[in-house]
Amino acid sequence: MTRAATGVYRGASAEQRRAQRRRKLMDAALDIIGTQGWSATTVRGVCEHARVGPRFFYESFDDLDALAAAVHDEIRDTALERALEAVAAAPDDVGAKIRAGIETIITDVTDDPRRARVAFAEAHGSVTLMRRRFTAMRTIAGVIVDQAHELLDLPSGSEHVVQAVAQLLTGGVTELVLVWINDGVAINRTALIDISVEFTRTMLENLTEITEKVSGGSGEAPGTAGRSRS
Image 1 (tube, rainbow, N blue to C red):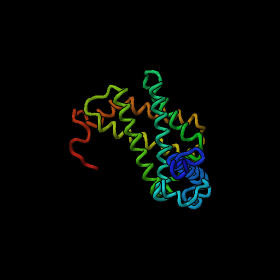
Image 2 (cartoon, rainbow, N blue to C red):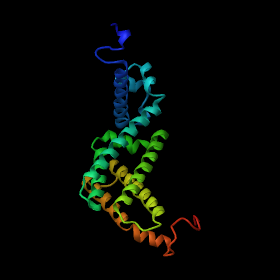
Image 3 (cartoon, rainbow, N blue to C red):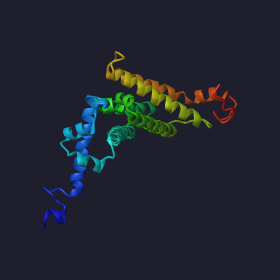
Image 4 (cartoon, one colour):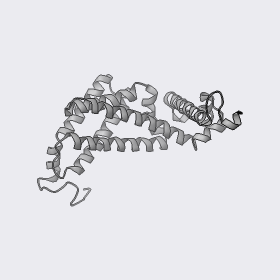
């Protein structure tokens, strides 16, 4: 059969070739954004780096923002998947599981400086990456909430506190990693992980006490009455 009849060229189907081109474009974007920054990233530059014709760019991505979002989401999903696997494999101990999850996700993202820059630093230069970073943080906070319910004996009415603490943990650790990446704090990665683990463990182990303080001992679920921001 002819190439037109089968869609096969050099042993690869049309679908496989599209997937290969998409992979090359994503790898090129990771390299450019992760080394030169978002401001230096262009469709033409990505295509040249990937050795993919510009006309093929748009078969996979609507625009440069869509490509950046795909790269960011892949970093997030890979790190989160590995972290959850590490938590599942860790001993049946809250501290061990907290360490397994945090150590895995920080190591996964920071092992490659390009991934760290895309996931953390470059979000401040791109509206799209900032939105993806926000979504990633909400996703991770949701995982923390789920893990807290699974691992801890939480008091009744603690849901609002758990959600608030999960956001605090996610935001706090994320900003610490960002500062560390930019050499803003003089610690090594082991210390970075240890601090993040202890911060998380302390907050989660004190959820019952925090809930009682927030509810004022009234027995009411925090946030269900008198929703004042004052």
